Image (cartoon, rainbow, N blue to C red; front, side, top):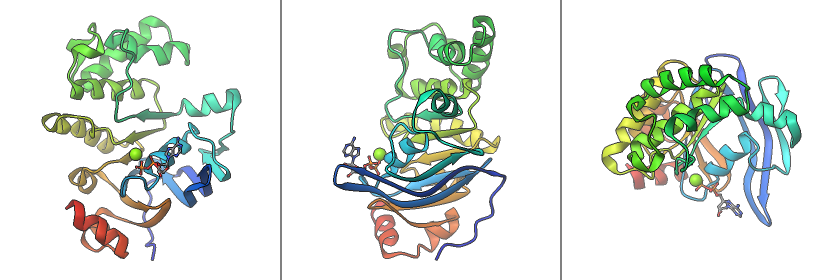
Length: 251
Ligand code: ADP
Ligand code: MG
């Protein structure tokens, strides 16, 4: 059923037979997935199908009980300094922004590079201002997160992820908590990143974005990758009854 997909570059993330349980609940069932450099993978599927858990396992925010995860050419260790280093290569943008409420926008973007990568404050601030400009919120740099709109805060969260110069960014429903009029300003930033060649894994219900930006769409249901294909293949000619049922409910 799986079609040959043309990948853009070398494999960056490889999941092999990944299995995860929460107690008795088998949440990821033998997941095999390769994400190549420069690829944009959109993950769709019903609520509870394991999309967030899959994202969180990719950078080991969640331990797995079976299988391996390889990042670049290194197997992800389960703990310790080596894990922290590898994890710094993977950015994450959450539904709920997760900015530090008591720090300025600028400090939110510089704290990672300064603390984790030991970049000088001056350099970190210069780079942060460039990134804030790129996502269109440089005029807000001295404010606190609560003074910004949700769309602005999420763009700051993207700038914060980029500040670490990650190899890959995971986006878990980055627009689901936003008022409708702010969704596009965030998707536009993500679309530009995709065009510039950033490797991205995006969980989203925004099918327009998936069509426009994805190289590959992955459909999950009940802990399984049920189907994958190009956006055209998936949206115009879904193979499995479960994917057809899902699409009939959301399109
Ligand atoms: P999705 O993101 O596709 O909605 P999740 O990955 O959040 O799905 O959840 C997959 C399944 O794992 C669901 O049944 C959910 O209830 C369960 N689950 C998620 N996180 C936890 C947790 N920390 N402890 C126990 N069960 C969890
Ligand atoms: Mg989720």
